[in-house]
Length: 186
Picture (cartoon, rainbow, N blue to C red):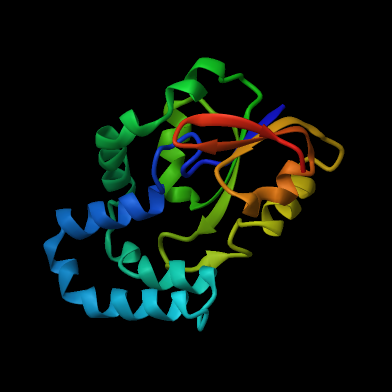
């Protein structure tokens, strides 16, 4: 089993950021909340609020949309081309994607790629709340070990050293920068 981060690893950008701006520009009424978004971003940058709370506050508008799944599917129709070619060439049936992005955002892409194993931030589209922890850093390892207590990954790919806990659960570790892979020692 090989593990992969999603954002800036197999997907060129950050899917949460891309989806946020997709919503902002496809639904211009959300622009009236720009001061709110800027304030929340500043609070997050100053470490006044945690990443989990930041995501909940930035996506506060999601529960307003009863057809959010259709909106997300439409988003992926215009963003599927941002899946990295290197990944699609080496993809295997037992790959696992472990992402801090909300599952509701990345699930259509995972389905498109026929990924059956995945762990992501559990964001409730009806309440706008994250259930449990934001799937980031050590929380990724905790979630993985809960589902796969005895598995050591063949390799783990990520764009960030924040995934060091996952690198440590792998025989090989690869940093991904702009589509370039570099094996690292952890």
